[in-house]
Length: 368
Ligand SMILES: [Zn+2]
Image 1 (cartoon, rainbow, N blue to C red):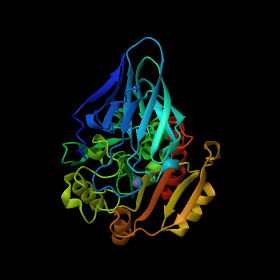
Image 2: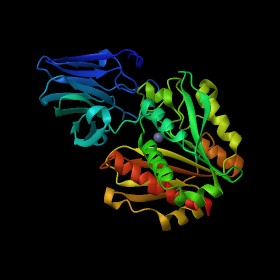
Image 3: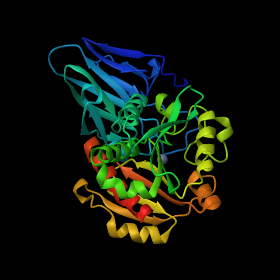
Image 4: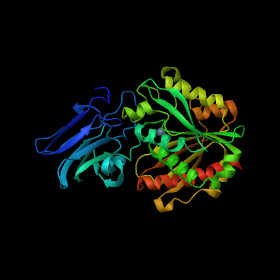
């Protein structure tokens, strides 16, 4: 299998309707993985990076470009890298106008293959497993918030791919430290939208957060694995490091992992929130925490997400020391929360609102 190399732009198609791959965050990223059948069907083979653990074939991002002036209906076949997850591939998202507006699509999958008809309006439109959040979105988020007086951007580490792992610091120095992070796993975009939703509300209504910001010192990381995101990987960084459970054991293999890990350990955080993604038709928002006291307190104030067809799934879970969350618990007594939020039924505005309400109540608990 060819390595993922985002600089190998690939396009195929006919009659003014092209399928693009090979751009940043696309999957697949190789010309060998896209093509047209003789009958005109657009064929996409999903790429799964070498060494990825089983059960991570949940990233796909390609673009369809309709150069005409009328919508076209085309046949699309997707060959997924794993055959065991048809349920999770039964729905996808289309990002109209390169991701400006999103819709969820029904995309029936059988035996690892999705056959679908796709209506492509004039213009460029993305087809993704879930709404993408790429390195350009990350840069735009940092630009949007770094100038706000309540927020300070800190560049924490440099990745092997030359990308910067940054955080936004806010709150009051010397108070209890909170590290909020997401995108350990490259395909899991839910946490980035949650953080974006909370930050938007915080700068829009700072008075509402005055209490929290006076009692906490926050370090917010919207993307800790930008090399994996850029390469269109599902799980791992291109270095092979799994930022989910190898930051303690293998960080020396990746300058970004090492710099990020050492920065967080140097903070000696009191709280660590690690946000992940469920993929599939999940109706559960997972809230995992080793503190029963925090679980009980959260149950009282947990925001209602039933209008997004979700209920909370709290779980008392102790993470081992190879997880950053487990290591911080062991070294500093940090209380850790790991979330898994599913996209299914949600659009970006729903995920932003979910993140706003979730982080508002969680940070209030931390500040109490
Ligand atoms: Zn994950």
